[in-house]
Length: 61
Figure 1 (cartoon, rainbow, N blue to C red):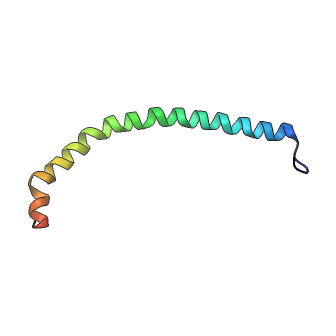
Figure 2 (cartoon, rainbow, N blue to C red; figure 1 turned 30 degrees about the vertical axis):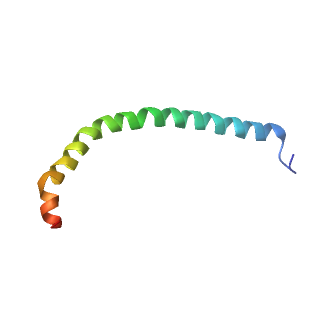
Figure 3 (spheres, rainbow, N blue to C red; figure 1 turned 135 degrees about the vertical axis):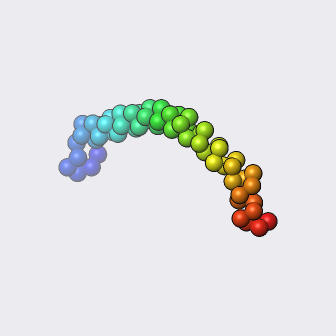
């Protein structure tokens, strides 16, 4: 292919990248689900509380 680069080294690099991408996608599937469940309850309450009274009165709208 390229000068000084053997086909086996290119295949090895591509294989490692595919493995890393597969592991990265698996980790991204599990991590946001856990964060979303933990952050969902406080985020919803904090969004609702200011919307009910304090933010409207502070904005002056």
